[in-house]
Amino acid sequence: MSEPTSQLEQALAHLSAAPEAGIALSAGQVDALVVYLRELEAYNRHTNLVARADPPLVAREHILDSLSLVPVLAELGAGGSHLVDIGSGAGFPGLVLAVALPDLQVCLIESIAKKARFLEQVVAALGLAPRVSVLNCRAEEAARGRRLRGSFGFATARAVGPLDLVCELALPLLKKGGWLLAQKSQAQAPEEQRRAGQALAVLGGELRRTVVAALPPGKDRVVMLIVRDGDCPDRFPRSPAQIKRAPLAR
Image (tube, helix red, strand yellow):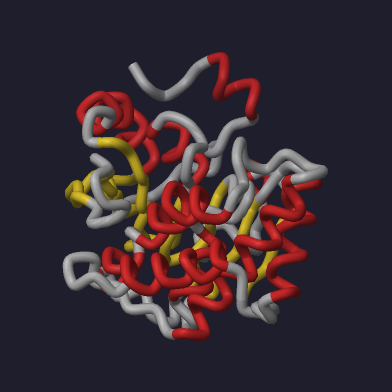
């Protein structure tokens, strides 16, 4: 075992098991995340998925940020539920959550083919199919289809855009009573809440509360918890051109 890999495994095991984080990964789950990080580092050499793919940095900046959702999902009773991750990219947070929560059904939606291929590669390498699926399409397309619309109990969307946009993409995919977990910085949260007000009013959603994330250490991250408690009109989500031309935020 190389020294960098050994240090990475120790960091993941130690930080994820911290009492204040409310997370405990098994040795097998840590091993799976190490494989994931190696796959990402190799793929990133020829296809740009993240700015820097060295495993310790990705573990600190992306894996731990994704793991911060684990205790929130546990509190909301996500066990055995279906989660959709919109704009999965390199797999944050959806693929990490699939490793950390083995009874969670996860659908990774990614519109860029080269990123979707990477996700499929990692799902195969980790033996996560059929519990984890990859859809190479836009979230707008998925949400307008009968098969997926209103079918998920939980949704995530990391670094996709402002909260009003995320709400328009995610809420149509949620069933009534389903939750959107939006990750933002504490500094962003007040403005994001203001921007999302109009969107939530028309999409049938409500911001219930904002939770301070325990991981990564030293980061000012929060999780904004939005529930779909009303009806979402069929006209949403609109096309990308319509969303860009007339965002719901006012």
